[in-house]
Length: 230
Length: 103
Image (cartoon, rainbow over all chains, first blue to last red; front, side, top):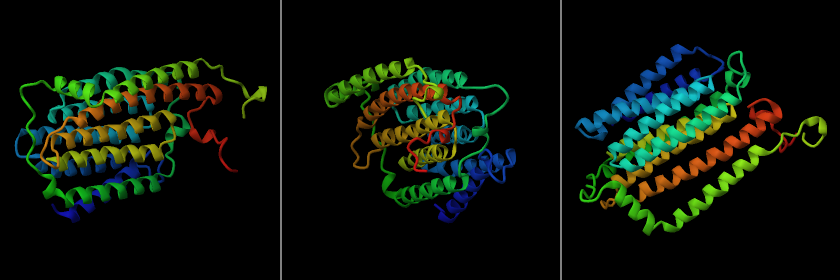
């Protein structure tokens, strides 16, 4: 794998993301996004051969492209509602990749819980906390986009370099899942034997979160005039 | 095979990280943590499917389910807090909240 090409691609992606951030100093909007999409597409087409020669690799490249582009729009779109909708796209793409990984039950759970429950809650809160008249000032300008993007892409370069450097060792033969049992039976058995304590604790956690959310949401907002809150 | 999934997971995680650091909207910041969770779930399941020692395991999927439950609890609490904060100050800008900031 040509490492110089990856360095160039990462630099291009970082520069494009910096330009596409809302309110960056050189905010050029759509042109930067097109540069960014080009970099993402080339990156994905480089990744695809790693995933094997069959249609598996093709599907993976498609889903990866959708996921990465959706993620880019989540963090660059100035309107929160559209960010949430693009996040839905990311969820669907990740669900598809989980199906490719034979994790069918987890893919279904991801779609139901994220797309069905969490995102609906997000949409409600976004609608509740919205004013008319275009994007709010805090949505129009990013906070320190140069430092943030540079830090993120340094981390990405480190991760990418490490993974690609170990590419030969990582490319082991795929483990064949036991075909006799369905995925949900296997995962369920694993959850209720080895991880049964975790399941119990998760139940307690969900109960506590529910009680906490109700308590927080029922609090009355104290106005600053009463001097109780500053 | 494994390398491709690791790269995609790393990309999603880093994009979520950048969004969390740079965006100034509380809701988008929490959305970005969910984005990071997606990269992590992908990594966990990929490591279970293509194990380094050759023995397939379902631990990755079990961890993924736990992560889903924690993400749901976190989203409920965080969104309740955001609604409360919005009622105090009528804004979603985290810079408004600097009670703990040394001035």
